[in-house]
Length: 498
Image (cartoon, rainbow, N blue to C red; front, side, top):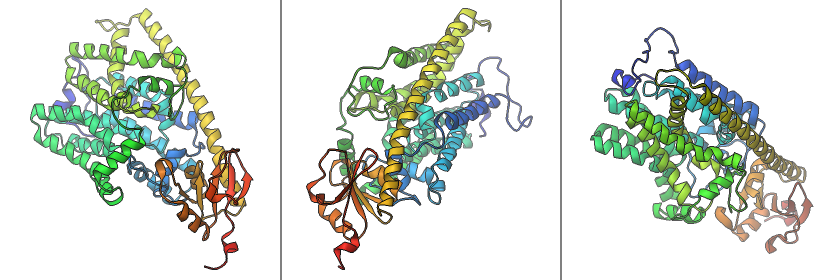
């Protein structure tokens, strides 16, 4: 990405060498960022693995434009960004491995581009360290190759904030203007509400600096995703107010609700902490979470001394607004919710670490280096353990869904078909069926509608072993499966001609 001359120099440390255009296809310093991004991609493929099956939410997003199964019910809070992102693969291929490799490569490239925006605003070594810190979190590694929105919101946020600063330094930087629009659009297509929260400090910066053009570009980028979400609300959810109300209801009712302890409980590898009960994780699992804001504060002090206060302050402000709703406005937690905040904080944290290990004359402090290295080694070990356990646990759940789907296929439940009941949405995707629900957050049918469909195509209801099935399907033939009981509707042909 090209940048204006003034923007490249804004906030750079005194004496830092400038890149000479034309000397290399990849300028000096960018090699560090490329190496971090490449290592991130490899780590995803090795530690998570392309064979990990799709999770519940992933099946919803992927099914919208999938060659494998009909679209699952798309509830009010969701947005279409992930479905569009995965469509180049899912629209023609049913290979989960291919999808995982595609997303891992794309997430690595995205991290490189988002960090590269900040070249000249921070030293390359700080940016590379920031990328490595973010990429080493188990949450980042697990969700990097996942068909989920939060990692992409994080990348869009970092790119958008950096490009806003570049345009502020050089209004002629057209590439940065496009970067503002692209970053804002990426956030808005993935999670419109997150995009609004993250953009609040940017809008304050625009208004304070009277940057009309920058403000219009930022709003235009946001409008591409938010506009689609609003139009869909009018067409499918009874209007914007109704969709917002329904989204709030599904998320437990948005309002003042301290969820800090919920987020701490989710750090142990709980993909969705709802209800979020039980004891807090071991202090070793939570330690980095408390060190993070302390180092960010040190990073701000470093920025003031280095005369780059605005970039660091804007990163901290956007990280705060990104985290605010998930820490204080919902009654449950998922570790992926805070990925945008973690990435935005990574640069000030990396800046603080370099400041702590070096003296004013540039020489290292051996004792501090040893302490920081020991702390980082322990941190990485904890992250690996949590990641390994999370992958193992989620793999088992998804293998059960796959075995259940294979069992259903053997019993004659093949596309076109319908599933309802417990875990119907993910199992239906694995089976190639449609899914229907008469209660909960994914209501899209009625008992009469399910029975009517079961007269025309193969259908089954799923329930937990020992749990009685709904009264309206009693009499359907029961077959035990992998952690579920399958209740098969009478074959359509047994009902006679209609």
